[in-house]
Image (cartoon, rainbow, N blue to C red; front, side, top):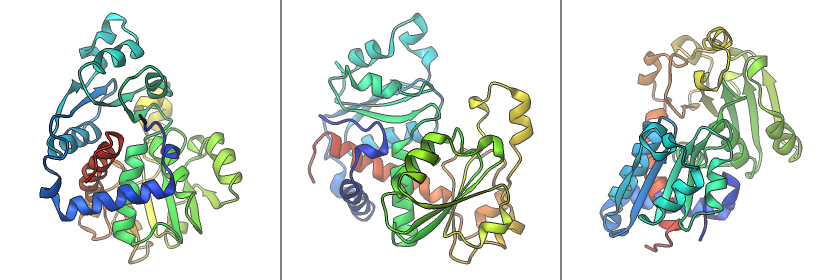
Length: 305
């Protein structure tokens, strides 16, 4: 039995296999519509979510399986004081696989230690979001045709942005990938990414607090929102939330084939006017997310084509 707690739990070869399966699902959806018939997925979301939770649910339903779960801690026995491990062991008696989101970093890992069914980390605090990263990798592969020889600009909340942390970890495994890290000083990449990945792997990367000066160098611009839920001080959030806003004027600095990505939800860091630009790929990401999660569910349940 395997779990997916962070993107490093998968090898480059396994990620390639998942992308291949997801692409086949996009091309031949009818082939897979009963492949997980009789299987059940639980979505245990102790933190609010729209795309990730519904994406998992749509993925399992499109595989012919069924879904149960909850969408907030208040609607579970956690509100009564039940531990995460007890919740997972209980729910594991009813289902075959669990997708879990939790505001505390490390909670899915702790849950996996006592679970009798596979656990998928659907986001834990500011730490990791491996299925969003799989979604991002599928998006990049489909839109750019490759996962190597790319320059990726990551913009916004790089301190608490778990999608950013997971994406850097994943893309660091491919050849000739360069990073441009755009953020205010207070929201720069944390040391465990800076030292443990960027410096350790001797990657090429730069930090800046200016967007326009580096947009022309990026093959991918990955925007993130400043996350109110990660701040203890409301004044700091309000001061930093509008630091970077991508609008049609700034898009003029980007290359004609640069793709714009965002894990969503957005607040105001991307102008709605950018949505009509053919380089905007963030709603394509949403569509791709269902297919890569379908492929992952099949893999962890050991269901073959």
